[in-house]
Image 1 (tube, rainbow, N blue to C red):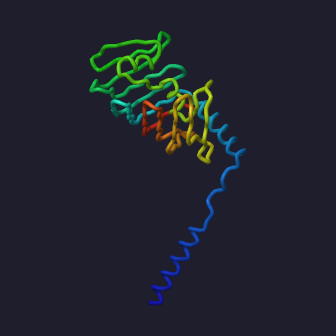
Image 2 (cartoon, one colour):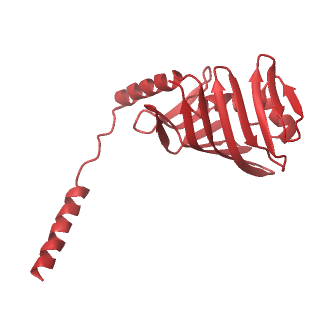
Image 3 (cartoon, rainbow, N blue to C red):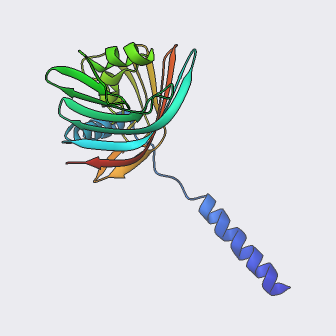
Amino acid sequence: MRVRAFAVLTITLLLTGCASQPGPPALTPHEEAQAWRIHQALVSGLGEWALSGRISVRTEDDSWSGKLRWRQGGEQFHIAFDAPMGMGAARLRSDNTGVHMEVADGKEFSAPDAESLLYQFFGMRLPVTGLRYWVTGLPQPGMSSSLEYDGAGRLARMQQASWDIRYRGYLHVQNVDLPQKIFIENRRLNVRLVIERWDVQV
């Protein structure tokens, strides 16, 4: 009995000691701003990047989900995704002439920008131009924004134009933290991204 009582007392003391250990001190506003500038510079300095994961989209009238692959190099991108309305796989790519989409039957369509093309075929206004930056945890340049940080110099929440973007977790990839879960919404559209893999050039 004495041995058991001693063991219980020891475990209790250990748990109490663990519980009383202080966590890392919160960053001051100045330190938080400095950490954000460092993080922003690291992400902005990435060369070509690619991600793979899952996307779900909900509108006022419909919803769909599927796999997503995105490769970005400079201003040009290749995006492959499971298209809504049972249309199978679709691929978006950009070049100097505009944006082109190839659907499952091999037909290709073009438009000046991705937003116009997606709206034309699927009736939804996905903010692809903004997403290019948002998926990496950065605001779109040249737009006013409201930023909230997560205590480690990374975005926890951002508002740009009519969009509200929330970040839930980051993946550490080659000394850079990149988003893992992103929730994007406005009054008419709700987008969820779960990123399973990042490949980056630093």
